[in-house]
Amino acid sequence: MSRAPLKVLQICHDYEGPFKGVAYEFNSAFADHHVTTLFLRGADTPSVREAVGGDEVIFFEQAEGSLSGIKWTTIFRVAALFRRQKFDLVIAHRYKGIYLAGIMSYFFTIPLILGVAHEMNVFRRPTRALFLTFWRPRIVMLAISGAVADSIERYCPGLVSAGRLFVTGHGIDDSAAQLPRTEARQLLDLPQDALVFGTVGRLVRKKEQHLLIEGFAIADLNATLCLVGDGPLAAALAEQAQGLGCGQRVCFAGWQTDAARLLSAFDAFVFPSGDEEGFGIVLLEAMRAGVPVISSNAPGPAEVLGATTPGPLAAGLLFQAGDAGALAEQLRHFNSMSEEARQQMADQARQHFRQEFTLAAFRHKLLTLPPVVALLK
Image (cartoon, rainbow, N blue to C red; front, side, top):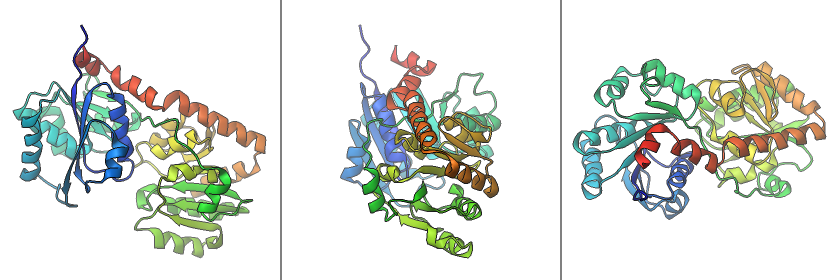
């Protein structure tokens, strides 16, 4: 006799950045079960409901900053969901979600809580580590990469041996459409015949676009650099490019709807983020599009690409994290490659994605974790 479908609650802080896709990723993994997704922040938006999927999407629409510290209103509202519905599984993203799920487990029976850590050093604060290791010792942690898992184990030793810490990675839809190269370049206002290095992401310190601009200036190639995204550092980065004498060759394309469909505009995708980056979903989008990757060898991104030693990979090139000169060297190396070699690298990137990072691959990893297998029996 088969088990009845699980009642699953997914708690998300908000749907900014990649989190619409992350929520969809987990909803897809539990497509045979009833999944409710809760966003603590963010307006109730039809496009978000559609993008997230699942069976029910709830928006608390709390204001920015309203989730800092202990907020009794939030706790009471989440408790109301548990009074309305018994949940067999709670998937809690980021520390705030993990904390709320843990508090609920004091008052309601929850057979399994999966806390998902998306960043490095989430449990560096002693109070957070104590909550996970002492106060709520039944929470099982999922790390998006081995680097994030190592960070968790550093502050919460013993989770691996206790069977409470696993690495799941990410998976994205392998059927998403790409615009033709010509059309993508037109939309980004890029020259059709240029060698284009591109990157996508918020213009913030963590993404280290300043290093990319510096490396591009050092490389001094007859090429264009395109930065897709906006953020508080936009003006400073534009000023940096002008000051380094490459401003005319750097395109700031701003925020773009569904930027992943525009990756075909790039000859190579550059990912300059350093040790703070736990994964890099945009790397999956680049490989899916068959775009060679030039990435730092920071633990998270390098793990996605399958190596940690600077130099050539099947799917791209690695440079020493934080070293603009090393980045420039790899830009020059890519510039010197033949079209045949670039195409081979693009094909290998796509193959690596299909083997490791599809939704089907993620679903298999998640549903074969021992605590999930036990729950599904």
